[in-house]
Image (cartoon, rainbow, N blue to C red; front, side, top):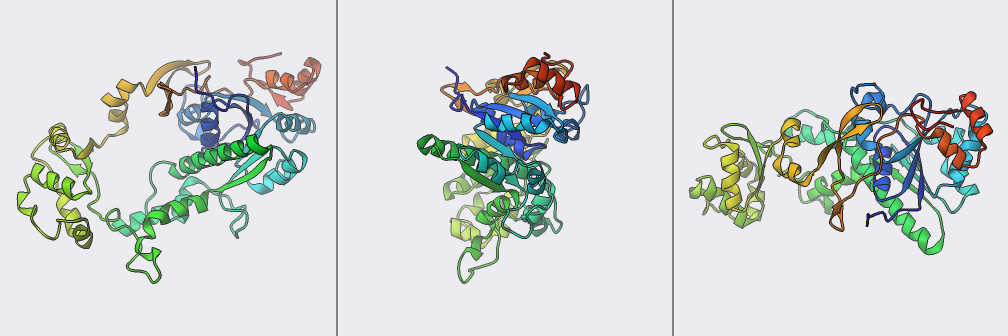
Length: 405
């Protein structure tokens, strides 16, 4: 029996790019029916996320939008409002990451929706909280990385700010938004009350940074400078081996002793500067310089064998190619090949979540624009003639390869 706790719930997906699609992809994975509404221009990530055989579905778009039904509507057309109203009316959850001003112009802001449909769950993912002076400002992941202090952490360590080469803020905030929606679903099931849930990227990522790096300034008065000095140490990096790089972490006194023995540094085992957690914290720079020294005596594989015998957490430092070939990921079947209706053979990534012994799997492929436009419009109660008129006037746009009338 498949794990689909959200079966029977419909989500209207008014999101694009990464943060919103991450949220709705999670809800689809848990069994919700997700209807993605796209404009004729389409989600920017269809092209922004890299090349594809047809130019319609970048790799990023494929992975973040599978399991969703697609309807394409020109919201500027006079007849679009009724189609969208019926979508809202028949949905349990509305997720949006458009700027509040744009949503208000379309009468799709949370106030307008909840005024008419107070039992709906409305989740707005914003760049900056609505109550602050930055409300409504445009933003992207890299801007939030800088504003929240993530890029600045690199400056504290290396002298130059740098972005993490991954849209990590979008992923983190999208997952948190999905969790907030699930909490609202539980409340609605108990008392029938809808909810407005706002998840701002800036505040969310600032909280993430400060939870670790407010550190000594978490106290009044402060007991030291901000920042976890272990994480900010320039030697806190993967270590060079004879043929590549290896990553390991040693935190407990037992692990430190095992590491010093495994790497032939027995003379340091009794050194009081490194014998306890507190001592290593007081000598953090010297300690990380010692543990970050190159290990070129052996290959990465040899060091992994040595560290595993010593029960030290260690793994190779993968690049994307070697990650895809990792023996563990291969064994658990994280990647598989499948056919997409317009892009041909693709590589799909299964969910990392396993429930009742089975890995979750989003049903269906990432759809071309308007793939189910006609079918969804019919389900909303429009007659075949009305659907044909909506398509003829380009109010609703249907994919030539998708389901037609």
